[in-house]
Structure formats: C-alpha cells, structure tokens
Length: 286
Ligand code: ADP
Ligand code: MG
Image (cartoon, rainbow, N blue to C red; front, side, top):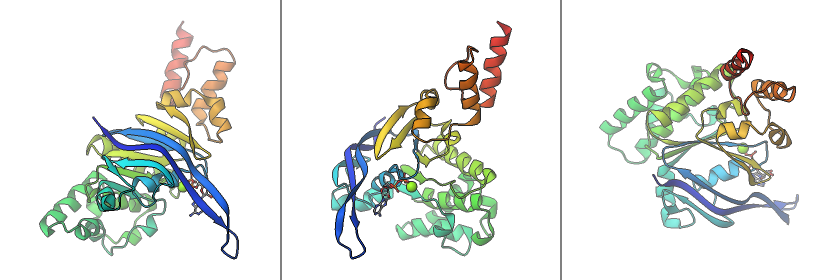
C-alpha cells in the first residue's frame, strides 16, 4: 500500500517576538523531518515536551504550512492552496483537551456536526453517527449530555466526531494527557479499534511509552528532529538512549534491563509484564 503521509525535509520555524512585537529570531520547531506513513498502519510519535510533536501534527492536517520542505497527505501537497480542503477531509485531528472539542448538547448531535458541515445528506449523517459511536464504544451514550461524561468518554466522542467525517488518517495529539489511567486505556483501545477494525491510519502522539506497545512503527522526536525510528521492540531495547531523550521508560522494561545488566540472559526490549514473566521462566528452566 502507498504512503498516506509523507514529509520530505519538513522545516517549521516560529518567529520569536519581544514585548513590542519585534522579531528577535526564530525557533526551529521541526527541523528537516522526513518520514513515511504507510496507509493502514498504527504509528506512534513520542517525544518530551517541546520536541516538535504538535507542530508536526499540525502539518499533517494543513493547519500549518511548511517553512521549508514538503508534506503530502494522500499524495496532496499541503503547500498548494487548492488542496487544503481535501487535505483536511482526509486527515482528522483529535487534540489533548476533550472539553474544547465537544460543542453539541447531545452526544449524537456533536458527532454529526462534522459530516453536516461537509454537506453529507441527513440520512447518511445518522448512519455515520451510529457507526462512529459504535466504533468507539459510545453508542449507548448517544442521547447523553457530553458535559456529564468522564474525560475518557468525552475523548472517545471527539474521536467518533472525527471518524464520522470518514478521514483516511487520524492524528491524535496527546489525547490521553489529561485523563486518568482508566480513561487513557479506553482511548488507546478506541484508537486501536479505529485502526484494526475500521482500517483508518492512526498517528498517535504521546509521551507515555506504554501507549506505543501496539504501534507498527514508532518515531521519537527530539529538538525538532526524528531521533529514533523503529518497531516498539527496537525502541524499547535502547533504554539508555530513551533516558537521554528524557522519556519515562516503563517499569517493566527498566526492570528487565537491570536484570540483564545483572547477568540474567533476557532478550532486549521487553514490553509487557507477561513477556518478562515468560522470559524469566524460560531462563530458570535452562
Ligand atoms: P511538543 O508538541 O512536542 O510539546 P511543540 O510542537 O508544541 O512541541 O513545540 C515545539 C517548539 O516550538 C517549542 O520550542 C515551542 O516552544 C515552540 N512553539 C510551539 N508553538 C509555538 C508558537 N505558536 N509560537 C512560537 N513558538 C512555538
Ligand atoms: Mg504538543
């Protein structure tokens, strides 16, 4: 399958200004990033605060235009004015704060806004609302007021709202940052469902390493650049490098790393408790 998102030497500079509004230089938030995202995959973008993740995300939805380099979404160059509408149809965005994204008084209405604005016929809007709410496990809440939902539920409604526009790729920019552990799990499960059941390409931006375990491919950003790229296992294998990049390595991966350093022959890149238990069991049977 083709590349749904491609960036070639993407650079984004923000102008820095003093109190009077005079330009005092630039911040290079994205610094020559070249990446390919295959259609249908689940991609994770990791990085500490200020590493350039949100700026990169905004290019995928053509909210920002490149200072230099090129971004293609489904083959469409985001620099071309005439492509903007199409790009925004094909790439949906979910942001950090669920309260800023929900505008409807009733869940099903909220999810219907996107397709309605796109001019989708009424009958089809309701079909899309139903299928989208089912996809994120929120169908039974369709008549509820969004205000009364938990953070994880609100975020799932936001995801349904984007899904109802039938995008080819959904970018979730730290969708779990404001949620409790239960809400985080719900949202990650919904994101995986979009990918596996609905076949939508998912780009999950996060600074929680445990959320990338199921990704097909991971990009780690640092100072606007792609510092690491690989499968979750390849990434988790490089504990020292991850610490340098100021990422919180999951306890289980750290423990496995320390056991290995202490001389226990475990494989690199242990991702889950189950894997650690199995690896230790295998060693103790030898
Ligand atoms: P992340 O999402 O990884 O935290 P961002 O893309 O938000 O990173 O920010 C990358 C860099 O760009 C940071 O140094 C940040 O201060 C700067 N930046 C982000 N948005 C703006 C803006 N609107 N104006 C000026 N600088 C910005
Ligand atoms: Mg951000």
